[in-house]
Length: 330
Image (tube, rainbow, N blue to C red):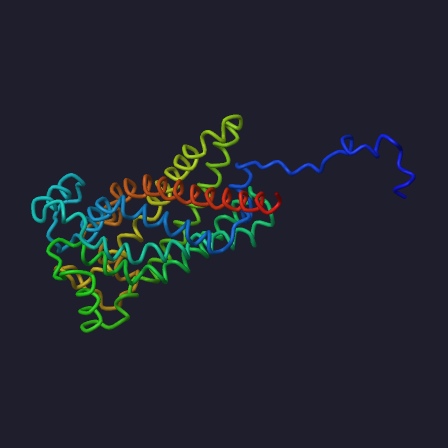
């Protein structure tokens, strides 16, 4: 009973205050849910995707033209020659053809990508931030969902990026493809895209989480001061490794999306095997790695930018949530 309490515990100044759990940002970053709402993951992911693709778009244009090679105008797989060819024929503006299509598709797709990833990571990891298998599976689930959103606009973007593209802009491309080829043309590469991005994201997310964890453990004392460097470094490593691993399927995807345009080959069946056979027959097995240099040059910094922006967005919402809660308590 309260009346039986000893005198010292009746003095308010001696009653121990309830301790708030200590906040560790490095734990929050790798936690299963990070204490954020679904819409906050979507906004952070959407901003990250927009920044990533807009910043690296010229490199993506070079990669696309190199991979669409075969009957298209650029006849060299050398990055410098491909870049010079674009600048000579179209000027700097040629490097940004199709950026509007990517802008329309990247935001919604990345919003779906990151929010699905976080939800799946929460469900599959069982609260274990070191569960690489859960990170890989979550990445695969995320890409299947986001590719359904991005593939139509990615097809438009690829066609606009081609040298001497016959389309005047995004809506002209959409209208003419719908009229001449039907809605199925926008999804001709969806299966290939998923088959490419499933291993890409599995390698990417598992590498990112492992690299981030390793970097944080290596400099645990100063991790709060090096969060940006950690995310950027881990993201770059993950992007480069995953990009190199999946280049052959990216070549197939580009060929399918650009078929029949600008003199590029048209495939009867549209199957992955058919495209692979055609590439190997014309260019040998080296043709499957066409564009791997600009692809890695795109994905390493793009992933660094994307992850840094995404984690910064999450940190912003975490601080906002903490401030809101502390205001309610006071």
